[in-house]
Length: 515
Image 1 (cartoon, rainbow, N blue to C red):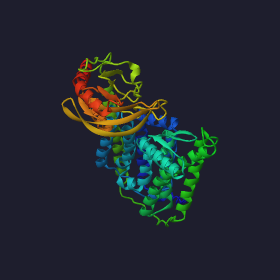
Image 2 (image 1 turned 90 degrees about the vertical axis):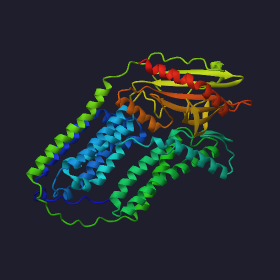
Image 3 (image 1 turned 135 degrees about the vertical axis):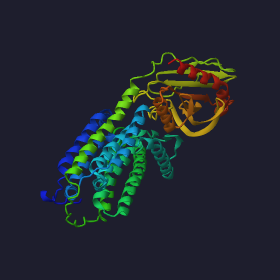
Image 4 (image 1 turned 30 degrees about the vertical axis):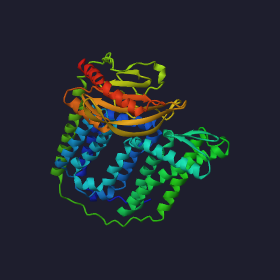
């Protein structure tokens, strides 16, 4: 690791810091107070999630990185940048969009942008450029990365199954679950390796900055810190299953397979750092910086003005959010019922035996239907006055969990269908029950009259609707059909969608009109 540069004498410190530094500290503190709910939400995730527990050490590391540069910063003249205030205002607007759309990650990234951009506004771009890495490292405090979990789980399952078959172990696979002669295994969230990946990238980025001076070497090492934990997790999953298989399920099962995983990951990461250190670049001698006397008391006083303006501009966005939140729509009572669907009649609830895992809707309805021996169903989940716990687009809203005792997802994709006299792109999934039943599922969203299956677009529609005073009435639409010898699930769903489109659209519009 590099040693901190010796501190310059006080005579080398620019006099403008006497006002500019307290102004910046007060600005950052007031911003954290103004956006405290977002900051506390981030800290809450750090506290309850092992994946993001590193967030607690990111701010201290940033402060240490800034402290070790104090000798090179001291002679620089603090300035101000009102053009940077435009970027700051843009970050504030992004925060507002995240709040009205109940998109945690947008609000949290926007908060970090606000804190980072306050530096050039109050101190100027020269100092902000000198602090580029510490300021950018602060973004690791955002709990971000769960979006990669499904893909990482899928890769882990595929590689593990491939490795078992290469080893001569017969495998019967269904999605993320597979069966070998000695037992059944499943790739769940904890097996995705996202924890290893986030930890490796965070520490690897810091290591690359402190160890190398060449941008190429830094980028290469960060790339390695992305690839190594992914491959290591594949090897970990394969070895755990093989240990269980060869030991008759006496080893690497239960809690101890997690312990083995972290021990293996620790060894791999330490080896990565040890190898990376062989190409370290010693710190270059620093030329003693000459104090800059440009920008004295007048410049410092303008930094105070810039700090005050920054706080005022920052306060606009929580005030706007408060104004929006103080005019909620009336709570949703009973949603409009679905009218009879031509050609379809009610079917017994136990005929399908499946219900999606949708969290905290304002109301929901599910109907199982049949038509000439074909079995299908409709599930609608309504949302109104959404917040962080009650929202349409959420990682908690899934068709089936990885630990579901009765169902597993075997395939997924997207397709276009004709619905409500327009082409709508929807998600399609295939589910299989452990009793042999199979169903095809179509899923998409309705946001205040707009159809989409895209999570990001649904969030945008929600934000625009709320900002224009139209509320946030939304719904998740799910159609499902049972496979059997006489009925293909997709063909059944096409017939159901044509017949049910006017009924579903009417029910959604009536529910929205009853605000």
